[in-house]
Image (tube, rainbow, N blue to C red):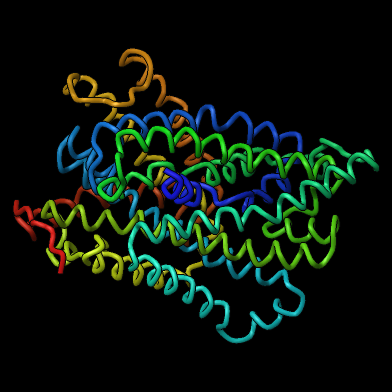
Length: 436
């Protein structure tokens, strides 16, 4: 359970890194409200849904397998397409964060800006994660446990120092920065920090006793993530650090303010390591999707090749190449596109949950969302509202000449013709996976 829990934690969160924009946009008061309330309508419903489906259908490919079983190959393909398209945006963020945090070290900021050094370091993150994943899911899971504890350790020092200062200064304020909170921006960043729960499901075929393990992992990870967000934000608020000082990487500045350079150095290094941990765990998740689709005949047979440890090595290399080509696009500012595409895929998973309840009522469910089928319908309403909100909030952002919302919907609309192309290319063949 512990390796899967750590890997899931990195797929969703990895720690408080990335929360800074919420404080800078909305202020401490709204940041604490958002981070506390949002999980009950966004994370918890998704965790419960995944707990039931992962226990009932513990197959490689995870959410792709659920939707395919409930609604057929067409919708299974759409589910996989939305997730893989979102990964292009999502996976470009973590190497960028890796470099951003390193840039907070004195002297490194100017060094990194010379030539294409930032891009080369981002590419190195992709290569390291690829090599790491070639060792197998077990290696990724156990390394995630180590990075989990290492990544959070500086925050224990920061928490202690922040509460100590708060007790002696009493200068905490809940007022928003400049008196005008940007709630939409704060909620979007929080949505991004609380998403990704279904990613752990794609490796179900490599998990021991998935029917028992997944429900426990989902609920535990949701509670731990919530705590690791709320406690640091509460601490720096209590210490009286102005919200205007918070933007991406500002935990390093808070460490300098509260303790000094030793904590700055430690937090910077583990923050960079945390971004690598995020990328590493998500690499394990996303690369199982092309493999599962190839086994169903929807992608070329070569993607079914595996190593003896179960790693779909061709799928891994193809995905790594795609993410490498996306690094220069700087999608770190386009989290609304990421949220929209991932959110649409999650809505399909809720539909699959309801459909399987109706069509396969006798399907063994070691874990079941409490209540009748209408409860599962109500459960999906919260995520649905926030997906609509993300599309609405994206109205002012643009990707080239297009509004970000229209761009997101355009990507989603590519799914049906791509499915038709896949069917035309591959026919109705179903391939057996290869271990060579």
